Image (cartoon, rainbow, N blue to C red):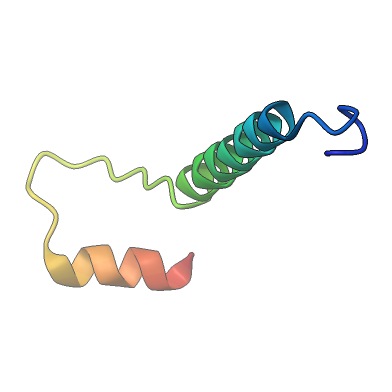
Length: 57
């Protein structure tokens, strides 16, 4: 990045930090999408049911 921004280290670090934050946000979003649980019931979900659903994922 320093070479791209012609030795302007502050801009290179800021851009690198933005890429890092974007990478983490995309990964967190993807993980949440994969772990999405659709449980249609009127009663509360037990810990056992939650662990069984997550283990199948």
